[in-house]
Image (cartoon, rainbow, N blue to C red):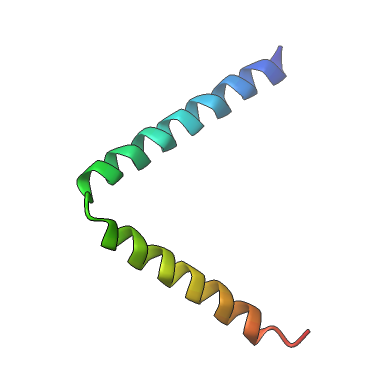
Length: 54
């Protein structure tokens, strides 16, 4: 039973996160904002990979 309760909690948290994300998406209606964010994220990831000595 404890596991089921944990699962319900996780589902609720996921639902809240999705609701917040959708709310944010409606606030920033311009796609340029999303593109800029994705570009920054991709750049940060590629820089981190490049900096790795292995």
